[in-house]
Image (cartoon, rainbow, N blue to C red; front, side, top):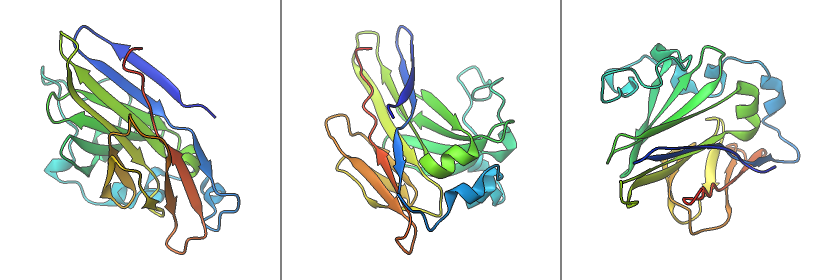
Length: 201
């Protein structure tokens, strides 16, 4: 299953978001199918934790809330952490989708990818955001791969690092391969294909 991608281009910014092509293990002791129609908190415990100031989604330069009008439940946003390139959040949508938000530290450009809970349980959610200057120079880029917190990444390709045990981030544009996540007992597995957005698109 090939990644589904939406690319938005402006004069100075290229933003890429994508839902990755993933494969769940042949036999899952974790039983992702049993979570069909479950609330987002079932997949990510952080969504049930008390909110703090750092959990608030970023504001745009005009002070308008991030993705205003996109149908998000802003009070559900929770910070997942940051790396040297970007900050990351998870937030629920009004349709009970799980949304992954990435914001570049250099420019403030950001992306959002949302998937239904049952799809997240089987496939996770992945996205990338890139920013380019008026002359085409790259000003920032990151990829993010989020899986349910019942899983943990155990095989991470070069170019990626772990923000949490279930969130991997970085830059794999010159690499091939996949990430592997498993349950603590190793009986269930999710393989996540790497994103490779085309800068020339």
